[in-house]
Structure formats: C-alpha cells, structure tokens
Image (cartoon, rainbow, N blue to C red; front, side, top):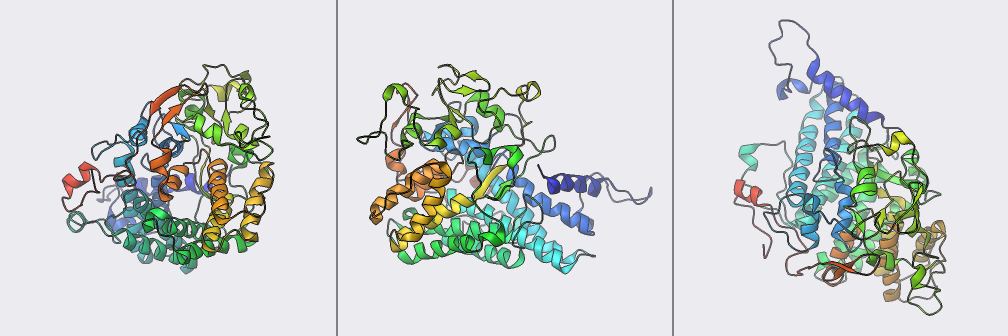
Length: 526
C-alpha cells in the first residue's frame, strides 16, 4: 500500500509547528501564525495536505474517531441498507424524521464542506506568495486545490441546494451574514474550478490519493450527470444536458489509456487493501494506520450499522441474467442466495455463507441477517489473530470516491437519455457485466427498457459505495422506493420508512448555522 503523501504531510505539519530558529524567537512556536506560515515550499505542501485531510472528517467520508464509517453509512440512506442505531442521525434521515435540529450528518456535512472550502480558499490565495516554489509545482498544486474545492461545493449543492458561495479566505466579518447563493451559480463555479483543475493537473496523480486530470474530468462527468437528471430539471428531459454529461464521461473513456484507467480484473479484490490504487481507482480517500485510520472493518464485522436489506438482495439478478421472479429464472425461495449475480456474494454475507472462517448463523448479523463485505478485509477465510482483534480506528482500507466502472455507467445513462441505446451504450454496460461474470445485455431494447437496465446495473455494481441514495434522489424515484417497509432475510418487517417528496429531496440548513446567520433562508417545509 502506497500512502506516501498522507504520512509525509503529517510530518510536514509537525515540522511547521515545531521548528525554532533561535532561543530568542518571540513568535509562538506552539501554533500556526498566518503571517509567517506561508514562507517555504514545505509549508505550502503541508497546507495542501490540510485541504485533503478534511475529506476524512465525520461529515464527509469519515474515519476520524472510533466506530466511525460515514462513507459506508451513506448507503443506509437508501433502500440498500439500514443504520438501525441511528449513528450520526443517518437513520433519522432515512426514516424521514430529520429536521433542521437533527444534528449528526445533517449538520456535519454542511460544516465540514465549508471547512474544506475555507482551507482551499486560503491555499489558493497564498500559494503564489510562497518563496522558492517552482512554477510547475504551483500550477499542479493549484489544480489539486481547485479539484477539492469543486468536490466540497458539489457536496453542498447535492444535499442542500443553494449555499453561500465564498471564494476568499475565511473572514468572519465578511462571511457571517452572506445569503445562500442559487444552486445553479454554485454549480457554475464547480464547473469553472474543474476546468482550472483539468488545465493544471497532470494526466496521472503524482502520488496515490492526489487529484489528477483524469479525476477532474471524472468529477465533471458526475456533476453534469446530476445536472441533467430529473430532480435538477423539474422532471423535464433536456437532451442537450444529457449530451454534455455523455461527452464528459466519454472524455475519460477516450483517454483511459493515457490516465491508466481500466476495469480491475477482480470485483471483490478491488476493495481490499492489498489492491488499493489499482487501475480502476480514479480518486479515493486515503487512510493509513495509525495516523488516519477508519472503522470500516469493525462496522462491517460487528456493529452491523451498515446492515444490507432484503430489498437489495431481491434486486440481484440470477446468474443467467433473469430477474428472480421471471419465468425460467431458476429461483428457489428455499435457496434464495444460490445462482445469483456473483457480485452479491462479493458484496454481502448471509446466513449459511462462510465468513471469517465460520458458517454464518441466522443471528450472526442481527436485525437483517446480512453483513457487508465491501470495503472490509473480512471474507470467507479466518483472519489472522492480529487482524481479528482490531478495534475501532485501526482499519486503513481507502474509500473509493470515483472509479472507472462508474464512468462507464455514467456514459451509458447519459448517452441513452441523449440519443437512445446505441452500440456504445451496450459496449459500456457489457464490459462491466463481463467482468462480473454475467450475461451481456439483451439487444434491441427501447430507451425506456435500457433506462431500467442501467438503473439496476448502477444499483448492483455500486452497492455499498454510498451512491444509490443520490441516484434515487436525482431520478426522483425516492418518493416511491423509500416510502416502504424494510425487511430482514426472513422477510419479516423491521421498520417503516417515510419520504416526503415536498421536502425530503433536499436537506435542511442546520439550525445552528441559521442562528449564526439569519440570512440563510431555510429549505421548504423545514
């Protein structure tokens, strides 16, 4: 595992605070001083690492603190999984019980996004002043900061809609009473930042975990895909927007060899620590024990707060490519986990399966009966004793934010909406299905039929990666699939979820933020 820049950046931060040139030095050496910090290339490098480090905050992808797995818990906002203990208020959102005072992820995602934006703004304002910097390094480092600022602002726009647009270093007096900027203007800035990143970044990352030109193009594709979707267009289909999204994804596919991207050979192995930074990974959040660990393994094997639901299991096709309810599928209710899409076995564990060297008992994973394997080291084999005894905060599997299979799926969706299911749509989907060991897509589908195929393929291929919640929001299907009972493996009802289409497509602005700034207008019905 290569996690060089994370560890190096931590060392640089220590150096920046610990150096003392003279016993008579009067500048405090136990804290940062804005006036003296940006004086060396090492300080600039550490400042950029600080822009990345916010990604691991609890409001974004998590990892700071025991028993935290925010990146995994995003899955529990959807019909795929359940956070039964309401960790970080994820279950409150999934149950439709959240409000502006809920706290947890609703508050944390807003605050941590702005924390990252503030660091990026400061870096971009200061980097040109740093003595001794090479021009090429400044260009590249600015590109990374633009990418990160775009990612943070896209997060705000995705969950909250309108949000104050701030492009200068934090200034309490100037920023404290800003109103929310219209979402379309925030997205325009996101796309502008991504263009700056694309022009300044090398095709491949200089170190694992850093942004690259390929990553900026991939994030641009995701942004444009979301902007073309029904939620952002009041249900109106705009082929021009879909074409823009398809073109953005195609730009990544066309230069995939230049960027070094291709589907990794093994779907399950792609998410194991020994295969991090593989050919499919476009951008990920880096973890390294003991500096910055996460609790992914602990959450997956023990707490089950990322408990897969029967609804997800039922969605997996049979290995012959047919839905389980289709005539001739071969589905046997008494053997419901047999002869299914191999990605189910690579993603989940279930009663009777072998997990951590033992047969899974019916009560091994309480509440739903299912456990999540993805982003965990645990599988069929018994783990070594040293690994088995891991406690919270000791895991270091990276979380993949963007990967090449998602780009292929983005292209297939956007191209189908823009022009119908042409040969390129089939090619993109069939490459993913072939890697999974599944039959190719049936030829001759209509646009509507292909839409259903693509949406299911996204759900299955990306299960456990926290993307399905935003998919059902942008498709405006959440009001259907989230207003339902949720079931365990015995098909016993566990709880009832509620989704109010008048308000729940957007999250509320946290009460604490509006107490500080009354000019922040609240989203409707909160």
